[in-house]
Structures are given as structure tokens and as C-alpha cells.
Image (cartoon, rainbow, N blue to C red; front, top):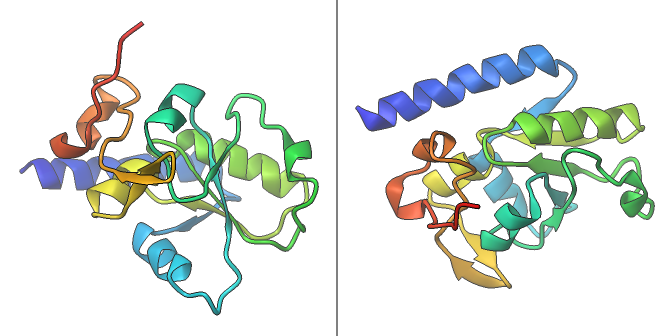
Length: 159
């Protein structure tokens, strides 16, 4: 029952986010995992569009954090406009906003990770903290954190 609820919620979120950011393409966690395991393919730049506190708990391997509220596109000055970029956040909204800005700036191969880090880890893909494998993911808040399977929901201090 919980799995069904999560799946329906992720599908609804994708629908709502796609309506808000129709120019953004999506990539599934499974497709991204296969891509990252294929050294013959040009590897994407991974951008984590979450807060610093969320990023510090865990992130995808070698992902760079980008501020979702005011992304510093100058930090990507050395990245070719044709380089593939995959953006993620907790569930996909903040990353879709960043992906849309990247497309408007001229980057042509930008993807939003479907379900973002929550779906990624729920499907059993690895996350890291200081280049060490970990399981916990920042839950964003108590409500959104329910989209994470309980074993992946990190305990974080409430401020």
C-alpha cells in the first residue's frame, strides 16, 4: 500500500512539475544509473539543487551542489553547452527550475532526474557523504520525507 502511495505521488509530482517546466526533459533513475556505469559514454555533470544542509547528508557520486534559489551559472563557465547535465533535488521541483534556467542559458543537454534523490535511493542506488557510501538522505521536511523509505530517511536536527 505504501509503495503504491509513493508511486502515485511521484507520478502526480512529475505531472505537476512538467506543467510548470514543460521545456525540461526527464531521465529515470534506472537510465541514469546505466549511463553512469558506461565509461564509453560521455559522463554527465551531476548538479545537486538542494540546500547545503541537504547536500551534506548525502548526494550522488561527484555531484556538485548548485544553489536552487540563485544558481551560479558562472560556476559552469568551463562546461560546454553540449555537455550533458543531470540536475536533481529531493523530488524534482527545485531541480526542474534549475534545469529550465540552464536551458534558457543555452545548455542543450539538460535532464531532470525523475523523482530526484528520493526515488534514486528508494530504487536502491548509492548515495555518498564525503566520498563514502551512506544510506541516509535528508528528508527535506517531515511531510516530504515520507516519500523516502524509512531506512533511507536520515535523522536531521530541526532548527
